[in-house]
Length: 270
Image (cartoon, rainbow, N blue to C red):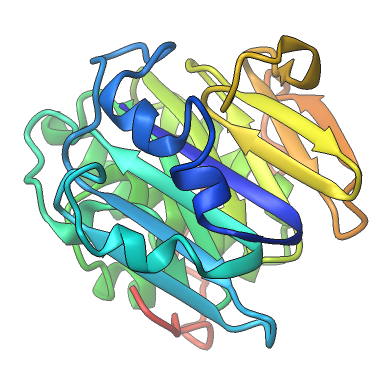
């Protein structure tokens, strides 16, 4: 499993989430409290953030976040849109930068706190086969997250909202394998998250929203735990909406690539 977080609000230093809180992301990487598999996340980390001009930046490392000397250079960066994750590599997957969230494509950034079981026993091949040719050809690594991210963007290209897209992908994966699927997806303006088999919390404060695997401090009154099998959508006005993921996909057609055009070739860093 992993631990991750996403923030939308007034610009803050990255260190306000990564290192400063009592149970910061660095601390969660070393001593996770609510992680369903493993108690630490030593297999690297990644951070994505948008600058004042709306440009997306990303930094990833296969070094444990608490040992990476480059982290100190990141903590002073300021942003009003941040996504970050620390990694415990899934069984059978290598520890390498290409496997670390967040994954990016154009303006979108994605992280998965979870695991698709039977990934190496057929589920991974089935899900890869659903990708559009352009996205299948641009896969950089071997992770379930990157494939699920591609499927989500394919659905958005087909006209789904980000929430609808993640809703559908969760069901596509769950139909093929047992899985824990806590996604974070953001374009720096809106944020969509899922709670599916692992812990998820939100904190709304002033004009900011924070979505996390684990609370960053012990002030229980400020954190709301999201029920399992829930979709969370944070719009551009910082309004938080939650809906059940237990309903069938909003578009019940499979993620069929047969009639797709390749006009939506992925752009941006991967």
